Length: 447
Length: 177
Image 1 (cartoon, rainbow over the protein chains, first blue to last red):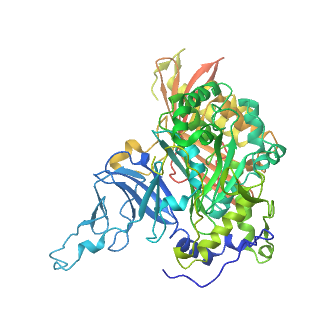
Image 2: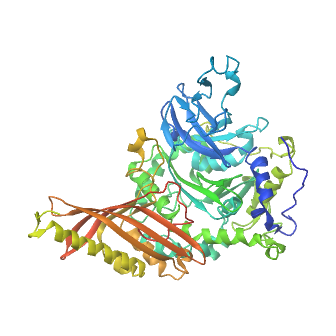
């Protein structure tokens, strides 16, 4: 892989100063596509999006269009959506069911396992000289974690298990709680005029919530009886913020094991239904995750490097100044319909393009992105100094743990990981933190 | 329109004019930012729904619009609609402060009287939105409404808004449809 020799030093870990050019420089953006989106394990889909054999779901890895297929043996593949003849897209729909994909340009036809099966004029026009086997669709490595499909283009990338590392200890709390696993609904798709990194670093930024989302916090308090999130409450919060391999996880302590786990969708009226569900599933969750993760913690805001945020939501880069956001909602398969409905509506109406919370984010992100466009403004660094030197190890939690729930450890960690990828010649140079977490219980990477 | 009568002797063409005025009035309420009055056009048991519009092949057109029970863009009852309007009055709804400048153009009305005395209507719309200095969005789509008479006025008890866009080319949807 051709890489430039440029060494990026964009985040000063002693002062928290961040060079804002990374948000708009077109050359840096092109390098990100190659060195980050070309190497990292990317969330691209969920098994429930292709439930039947021959189903496909169209997705992206960076800017590259990707067909996620389930072949007739049930195996999941991820292919670059590109005919190997002239490069045309062979799939143009979001979803469908097909054993074969025919390129609409000259008719080259591929199986959903990626083999080039038919070429018009193979004997006559090519005189039998075309080596069809060498024109397999470009295929990514695929692995799944608790039903979520991840893919990478890099054959040298570590396993997904190593890539997630101890971050899975915290992710399991939400994604891997029950034997029957999860399903997703969505996505809602829209284009934001922002750099992709701004959205990702924000989705684990606890500091912005009481200000950016104040109007939504006030009306959900008024109509749903939910407590008001304040700065004071967040500064005093005992909740944890963990950083592992560039991933960021907030873990919130539950008051009781049967506490309703999520805010969006929970109201005073339906709270009892949630509590009954969490009581009924507690022993199964304890068997799978141990008592701490099953009954004392819930997963809050989080991001998976590089572009997965808040459950299963994706920030697809679309040039330095644009991001295509995909909003899915993750549900436990065994949830009663009433809970699925409440979570779908709550997460759909509070987040997403029309979300009562999320609609207030985009102009902030755009302002951050665009301030790096002028020579004057980009002379001024972003300040990410909050909580400098205030993170370390914690006997009860893996990774690096922030002293306070609100800090900019998240951003410093994210941009340091960005440097790890951008400065690496290959995966040999990208550090992976050794696992130390005690994965109590029976849950594994694959369910 | 035929001379067919409906309900209390109103002809379908009179009904069409009545509904068209209803929608013209609704558009002005929205564009003049009279959102409380706009809310009052909906019943207390309203279902205000904007499903997702998928990009699918011709043989999959039954999957083109995500159904009820699937993740939607808006899936509001009257409480959520009221929250959206209440939010604007908190003074801290940043996506609408400064507010969007909108123009709702509504037309192509067809009505279908239902046996219950209720009405079903379908309209096409173009919503132009200008925001901040140079942001512009154009949303096009259809709205299918169910209406019933309450206290002598038509009120909407179900609205299904289907955008023509697949990937929405807007930073957010902080305006009403």
